[in-house]
Length: 170
Length: 106
Image (cartoon, rainbow over all chains, first blue to last red; front, side):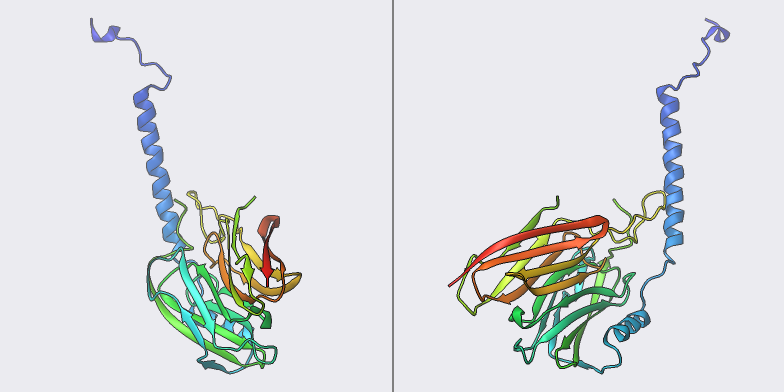
């Protein structure tokens, strides 16, 4: 059969045209995605300075003393999506002498606040635990506000190998 | 309806300091992530957790996007009297869940 007699290619999508089309479309989206994440790497994050500013905003000009607070968090974490955090404060937790609030701040997540826990003498023991996200290797600080108006703190430097918060959905 | 898990000792002696644990199913979408076309995924978090013991607040927490998905809280209280502990989580998009647990104090 001479070549000219071959039937014309149908205009409808065949399996081959569909596959090539789909592949180039996928390439285009992933290239766009790469560009988007490049642009985003410069996005605003909290810095040690914004954390300090937020701490001052929360506690005012009161002096911040080290001690009484024990912040327990793993010093190195593989995955920043869920990091166990435990804050204990030395206090008899009586009506006359108790912890009013425990604040936790971070340096490099998008927001400086992590969690704020309000307690009272009914708590019995000033010890709370939760799980948090860490966007980067950074310093975490826990501050306890006593009912007498003093502030005590503890800080831990945490190394994070896989960050949370800013990654794309999987 | 989000599922919640609560751990309260069913029985305690008067004056005992008892541990309480509460976990709730929630994505805690930070509002800082983007989908594949670069559009920002809106924030959807639980921002407030409270625990009441027979109507009296014993603990309250303000949660920020830095709290991991499926927020977990562990804390303590003094067993004063038999009754009910009430846990409430509230946040974005009208999220509001209340769970209760019974405690018998001897």
